Length: 434
Ligand code: JFZ
Image 1 (tube, rainbow, N blue to C red):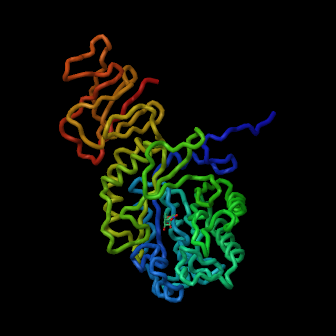
Image 2 (image 1 turned 90 degrees about the vertical axis):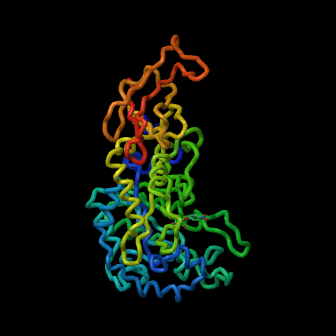
Image 3 (image 1 turned 135 degrees about the vertical axis):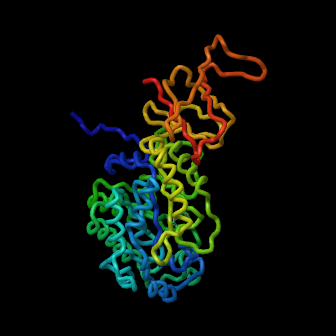
């Protein structure tokens, strides 16, 4: 018998990729961008924004000493916010390694802090039961073999004499091998990023061929067969990663659903940015989380710790607010997904089997009409306090058709209190007939 007939469930998930079920269940992760750019404190791209030469950028290396970094505090903050996995930058475009790599001197153990911070961080998050993801930059603005292109800090030179991409690729594959052999089980690898379509005339953007991406992917799967991969290797597979925008509807490809994960900042930048004031409110961030799940995706929410190794108070406040909500509403998030029911205005549905969750973004005056649910709801309650919500079903014979009230015969109408409950986004849990 041919056992090899299993079909793909998701358009972007090859059968030889790891089992994504934990990821689809867990829904909510913490992204951490931490590197030398924390000290510059003005966006993780400032090395190239300001065209800084590695010799000058070295000052951040020489002064990198996040002495207050207690990874257990980070891990607890994530866990209390309801996050179930973490994705931490091992190396960003600046090229600095947050672990004790043997392939370069440009690493955390050669800075004043001297410690292998990656090891501490992974241990602490595992201790709190979170799954582990690594962000790894394909781009490297420090490595002397990495060919200069239009994104590179030294782009004004327009000269690649002495730079050999093959040598850089060996280094890239070598560092990935270290990360996947010396740091225990890695659940998710988040490569960043490919830009093959960019063209500056004197240079082109880099993509799958440049990274030897198919080879790299095979290496990763050989070393860690259960690992999940994102889509930024330019191989047209893996978790799709909308960045700093929310898809408008559930994401599909060739008629099949896809696995996707929005990544979002709290203030528009990924690395710590001292003077940036573009902070989203806790309410906006929470609504982004719910919105993502209602469209069948995951949310990876970023914190950029500061140069002392602490989460900024503004980030902590937001994580805390989300955590308060998650404590009471976790079951409308974990294991849920998009619902096919037509959602009323200013609301989002999530669904898990016969539990349907109505998230009310804008509190209405006493009634919400839910289409297509007549005869299908056994019981309804507010989720945060398990208080019953009355609802009425209208028999088609008894439809009220005065000019004021026209009720769709297939709808139910919820009776809500006038006062909005004291939670950021109230949720009505609807128990559907089996
Ligand atoms: C990338 C990184 O450059 C950024 O610093 C951060 O780590 C984010 C999560 O991922 O963001 C991108 C990716 C692609 C482009 C720009 C930013 N692009 O194609 O211009």
